[in-house]
Length: 313
Image (cartoon, rainbow, N blue to C red; front, side):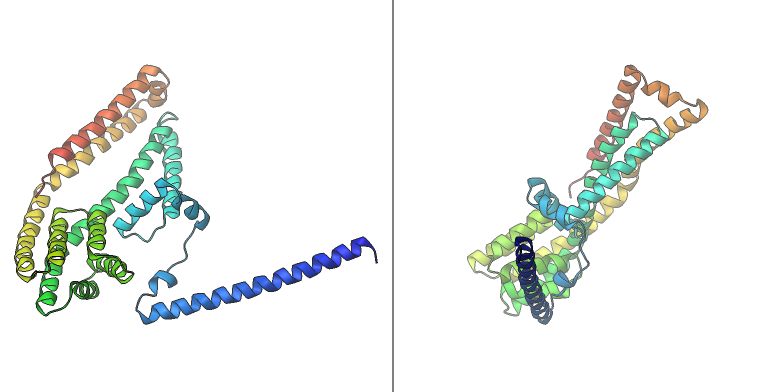
């Protein structure tokens, strides 16, 4: 028997052994996964395993190892969106490419990089908008949350049990956020750490007051029923005040975004009246500088209007 035949037989035998090991590892992993799904189904938490199929897993794994990936993951957790950092990064790059190409086709090549930078701001601005929207919903649920905790505490339940009960009774986002707190408590994290993490994820004065009340009562071991009753009334009043202020400032906020849109519309109208005007304007250094200065002034105007119309209640 020749050496080639021996090498072929050895390679075939090795591939067969590796194939058997691979099949055994796959079957074992599948059985362990099914056992985990069954165990989580008994506790009422199968969504984390049986959810939708995540895309771009390779990019997501690499991104989570970086500081940027951890920041994106923290922001996504605060928004409540069913997105991974990898999916968000790919979506943001797609948005940047789309805005770049669109700006080059509609205006001129000079506006392509500017539109790309705008795409980054739009992506992270969307996360901030979703986060603020979730915070507003959570603040509106705080009176009911405080009332549930007060009733549970008055009935003699421990604070951990009261938080778990509130997570089951309240709708999203309060139910989801308290569910995360209950999960942290279930794995051994202290109440102070779990509530502080909640306050960092959804920062607001109302939530800070509630968390401080619960933490101090847990440390001191005193009754918290009276404090929660008074806090419930205060949160109800602040809820109505915030609603009135938001209604009064809605026109001002709309103006802040309408002015830049009118400027872009005027630029397109000028290009329609004088075809090629944008290309000729951005072909020189002075024209490019004028465009950049105008965009900066529009941005400063939006910032100033938003800042002046921001009223802390």
